[in-house]
Image (cartoon, rainbow, N blue to C red):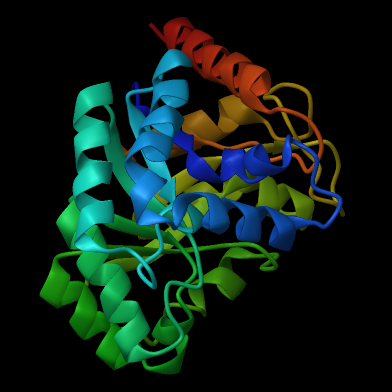
Length: 271
């Protein structure tokens, strides 16, 4: 099975600070939001972003929430984002990050944004989903969305599934982050197989060692990417594979391009 490969927008977390983020993830989030929030410059800046993605050979993009947040997105932002995606031939495949709203009002703004952008999946973490699971399920139904709750601190499949077990309906599952499972000492391929039909989305990521989250190009770390692909095929997962690498120091684009080639070579090897 040859899945579509998507570029994860969080790869650009350090883009606006010249690929050096001594202040950590929060610094990257704040600098990204400050860059994209002004509506007068958004169209040009978002188009430039997608142009970089297209140059790397991707036709699918996981929109990172810091680049277009429901808290501040206006109809003008939405129109510009849709136009840029169409111009660059890029499909917005998921909405990555979190917390996707702390309250019902905040969460609904995010859901309305995704409906307007025709983005089908929230692939991350929603705080409101765990505060009011039933109301959250209602929003998913209202806006025709699916939710894949992403693993970060969770060290097992059971721990991850427990985060969505109270959300009713059939629009809920998990987003597997292979790098975070490896960081927590859990075999990501085994986790994919165990999760089976609960997998809504996959963030394909490698890390250099367990116990830390030092991401790297595929084949340079401890994640068995080939086995993750086999596991995805074993469970019949036919959605996109989001290639993710977000170092706090250094430009990740060449490594992401190598990772994309790594996966494509594995797909060719199966033929």
